[in-house]
Length: 582
Image 1 (cartoon, one colour):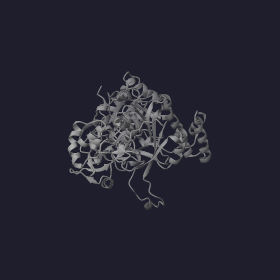
Image 2: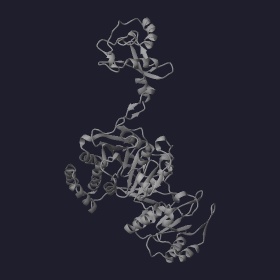
Image 3: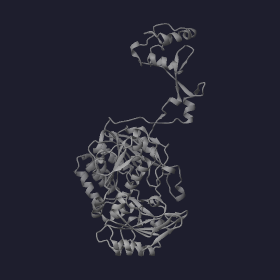
Image 4: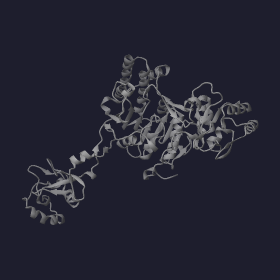
């Protein structure tokens, strides 16, 4: 079940593919209902930006038949607390976009609560747009007693909205709700480094090597450490000179019942550590003695774990530089690593039902966890697949239904729902020709024309803008055909579109093998002469089957995979917990 990417509605995937109490940690970063589209930008020539965007997802939810159906699913479910709460919210909010959004989230949270282990945790990432309502929904699903934290993540530096006429404080934070399924949840404390002011105040002493330390008491109100000895005073306190004389002898012949170095704790107190610990501290140079001979423990700042992590996170910056893949809502890997380290251990299963560009699954793989990612856009799944193969070159992608797929391990992952063979492609076309068209464009690295919106396409289904030489980009047109009635007239039409739009190359992607007449017509289009890379056929016929099997590929100058601005994920260093190659 682990190490899988699912393309499809996460509600259906959760119900059909994820078993009860099988997941250790869930992170979800659902759409924020912020009334805007998030667009993925592709590299294009100047002046082409209007056609150079594709909507990754529209995060505005509207009340309609789908929202009504999901609302009634909640009412019929076993969690009556959630049913009553959602009815109250509907009465208060009405049948609007916010209610549709909350209904969608509530229905999925119920499934996520089902698949979460009793020791598991859930982190929901959102912004203040709907956070107050989302917390009410989370309380209903998980119980308010299982709310552990409302974490504030500073996602950007200070900025002034007043310059744009905004009469409010700057918005620079996201919210992460941390819930568990029970009191017995997995937990590993996390720490942040000490700041310089704290070090100077708390660890104000310096040893001969310049290491900062503070003194700590070695006694306690009750016996500690090696309680067998009782550690009550048996002999009188000797002079400091006598203590120095006894030091070596005490290490050589420790005697049961003696006080450590003939030093007794203050009246009514006990040693907090056993005799062996105290001797070890002395050998390590961690004891400092007062004039009375009473030892104190030296706690070195560089040996301390740091400051216990609080619920305000301002030390992790947004994804930038080499990490930034160009995805609009991408979160930094460090943020997900912190969550994964705190609430899971190696080998645990991490689930992200809105996986976007795959930061959660990337972090899970890096930290030796198993993972499941789900997204409703094939573009996101395609991006994650490339990201994982770039970041972890040893990973293999296995096809669903194969023997290897049933035994997916740390060195492989499976992509489910996206066609991996010709039968899957035909099935996708029969179910949704428009989605098939969008998917087929990704086979040649093309962006869907006009954002993939339905309507008249002027003979163009996709576009690629390869950089043929520095500063110069050309246009490659893609035409996708999935039906059975594919013939030479369609090739002739594409040839005309190439000439009309002054494109360099046209790619004819077909689900049906081409006829001899189609091949002959394509050849008559001639060649595009690249200034640096040679000649390429102006009109290329490519079959879906050949592209899937790697036997065919689009041929045009430079720009791997169509020149998308999605950057190549930096390869991670291979660690011992990532297993061996097959």
